[in-house]
Image (cartoon, rainbow, N blue to C red):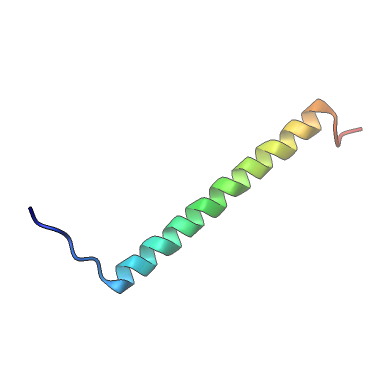
Length: 45
């Protein structure tokens, strides 16, 4: 079975992409949370 050799540049690129995806997901969670609070009336009144 062959294993793929990942270079340091590829590791850094993959890590940066994962961090970016994590930030986007966290932003979406925060956005949905704020929208929910406004709809329920926690901040809208």
